[in-house]
Length: 152
Image 1 (spheres, rainbow, N blue to C red):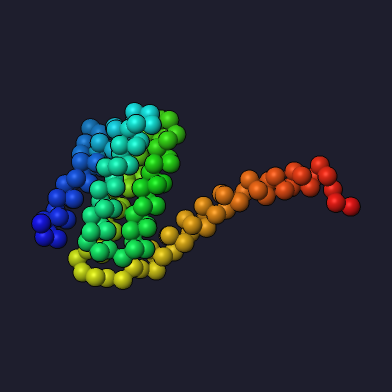
Image 2 (image 1 turned 60 degrees about the vertical axis):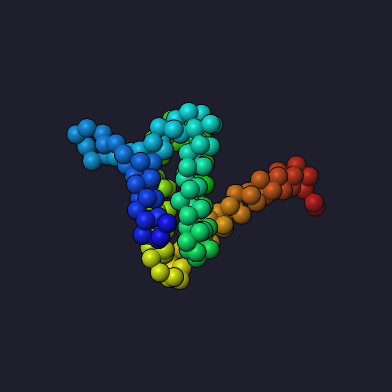
């Protein structure tokens, strides 16, 4: 399968996941991703696996690694938000990680294009946020211990 066919096939797949249905009387569109994600735990895992298809194709098409990382982070944000009952399902309608990932794939798969500064900033920002979240409990424990047992 050549690049053009692969992209067209992924476009249809992404449409099914994010935009297949329209709420009557509005421009609001949603797809199978939030419907599947409505099933607690199993649905979120299945939706993440389906989203992974676009990321795998990006890897096969030699999209720059930082762009692949950005795609994985888009999917991870979708999964984490999707874990929150009801709120996560509603957020799935608006976040549309598959559409975001497909646009990244389409932009970078047409030819070997370097990752943009925006791609690097996004990945760097997410990594900093993850580090901050990981360090927050340690800071809280340190402050509590410091209050309970002052050094001087």
